Length: 244
Image (cartoon, rainbow, N blue to C red; front, side, top):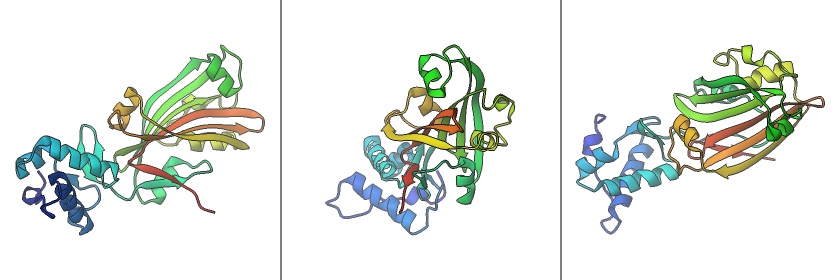
């Protein structure tokens, strides 16, 4: 347990439920700066042992703090004090690496998949090609300061970017490469709230019940579709914003 965590108290008015008093104590430590952003929060077991409360009480406190965006729970690693929720403009096509670097954070990509596939009906329609034609498929997990923040599942039209799979996507993002070889003429995108699929939970280190933001996007260069991509963000770690 990190130094100082052993003295945590479930402080607050006695009429408050114990889990609320525990939440209040954790929030106070964060607000005073005792626990800065990315500080590891004691686990359910540690809280239960220290405070002599049930794991159910500790779990509810941590679960509600995560849903409020106060902490981030990374499956397999623990809970951490959340930094200010990351945000991106609702409209436009931004490079995730640029977004992260502009916030003063470190961008680390992880290439999960990069291969050629044959288009079925749905993919062929999305890319504006014939059924049975090849398409490039990449899946990349983007981390911000070691926290997975975006899962990018992308299909690319080989006729527009024939050298796509030859790129080193640990050094250049697909977005940066594609916009350099096929400048965007127009874009179509949709945003929805979804629950992640099991394989997405594994890579994003989230539980199945974590609400996520999903952006579905297609881009064109001149009259040809360049790419069709799904961008999945854990809802507790990211938000979209717009101003006018």
